[in-house]
Length: 96
Image (cartoon, rainbow, N blue to C red; front, side, top):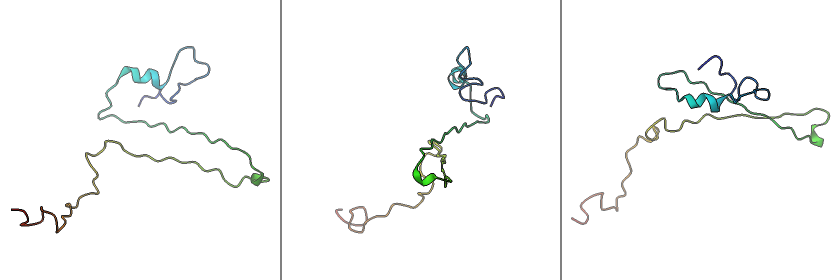
């Protein structure tokens, strides 16, 4: 986190004389281990008017989901031992 790095495209993206924002900030290759991480969630809603929207638009929905990638070495919910089929050669005295 840096207080001057608030907008991913820079403070004035359409009026900047030099490039700014994420492409410039990531070039410094700063270490993030043990640091506070800032997440920018930017979205826009495009409304395509319909006859049903008149006289009052009922609703426009948007959302997002955060999903970790590489957070665990495996699925922590899978903690059961594998089931062994009784007919398998791994189940008993078969094929000795």
